[in-house]
Figure 1 (cartoon, each protein chain N blue to C red):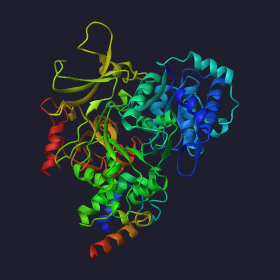
Figure 2: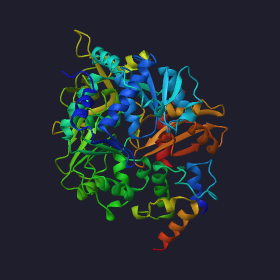
Figure 3: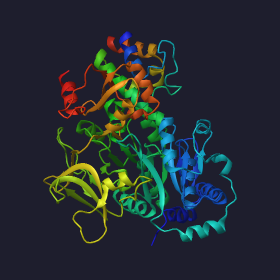
Figure 4: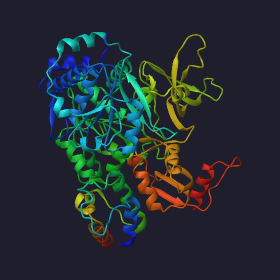
Length: 75
Length: 500
């Protein structure tokens, strides 16, 4: 989780990713961020987030995204 | 001869007044709506004595923003689009450059506009969109208009830290729209899905052919470009058949595997540009739209949008680059070498009506690249030097080689690395900054020396530069590599980056 928080924090130092669960709904993340997150997650966790998982519900909070990564790691 | 770009609108509104011209998927505007509201905006500006002046349009991507553009032109003024994606500092610089009497806002932007420091007034589009039409006055203004009158200023990255405003006139836009529409084979059945923001010249490709042919443009909400499957579904839902997108928007869909879930059903014309299309991703698109025409478009803002095109008609190896092809009709490309002689490889220079008028209120920058054609010593003739190096391939097609300076294309946006560096160097705690671009991973990398945390630096930069200019990776150094002249050594940084 720390590694993921680091990726997110680099993009948006001003956001508290532990508590924020409206990253997409409040337009904090944009398409640049999504592309960056996906490629960083791929490098760090060796996990490919494919289009079917690129949905608001997985990107609204660091927690949801981390759960997705864990799920994909198990597959 | 057509000398007014809105003749397209005046003609089409008589033919298909009730057809939808622009939509964002929720709000539709017919050609009649666009005409009526544009005429009201023009009347308002006329009533307030705004004539042959810059009018700043600070509105989001939505149909009525286009009516505000057209209304500005109708009163013989020129629109300057700005957007909440731009940081306040940048918008302020633009206002200082164009000194508008009016900034037209929408409900979303009006509050932030109140913080601008300028001598003009702020008005809400909705308050002026029903202004009674001053037909007599507008007809007289129309009859006086000449085709070298400016119609817009769009701002692009400037290496000195100040954005440059490119001014275009009726004539170059009409020329562009005529030639581009031929190449794209636009008809009244064309349904565009527009990706680009309205504050860049790239949106001309959809906005103006729409009024020329009575086509329809869907302004795709930018949020959809985060979610590839929803994006393709949107295209299908609205039966979009023609798109002109930056390559990074196209690859976002193909690289993340969206086509496993949904494929575009109606697309028959796919234009792309601004960046190199990786062949692997191109082939994925080709496989889901085997009968579509794929067209590479190339051109700088200073050449009114696009000036060259190549329709893909052969297969490419994975390590090949799709050429930029040949100039549009009525445009000539000259390749000039270091001695200003024509060469097979050299700086791409544009000749013809498509060359814009120059940079607004900036004679110095204008004279650097809008120059007398060095091949013609006999009479005044301005060409535009793009700063791009090109060459002809074995098929006689133009191929992009590189830049001769530090301008890059990142996520479809044109960026001067110098502009990022200047903004970092302006911070008190920074001793020196240098930027490089990683073309493989498409990353802007910033190196700096100074007593500042990376986090604070990022926050500060975000208040000054648009999102797409924020470095993807920031690295603090104890010492900056220097050239023998004591300047920041970009090549040294690049070497350091590659060896890390």
